[in-house]
Image: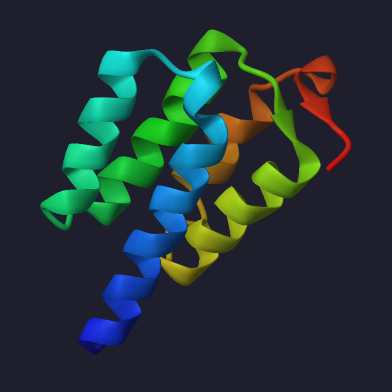
Length: 95
């Protein structure tokens, strides 16, 4: 994989964090940005999904789709989708 691929992942993860920012704690957001900055993209995505699931934080259908698309692109089709399934139906709204 080339540098553009990783830059694209980083940009998509940052964009996702920006959209979720108001629903996540400040320290969580800082830690997640740090993971992205040091190239720990998989860890960042796992943590995003975990924080959402553990906190039962509402997400839009579009946000769920973006997270799942990132998981597929990063070949993380197991843990991340499983974490998102924990979110109850009322925690997911139309996108």
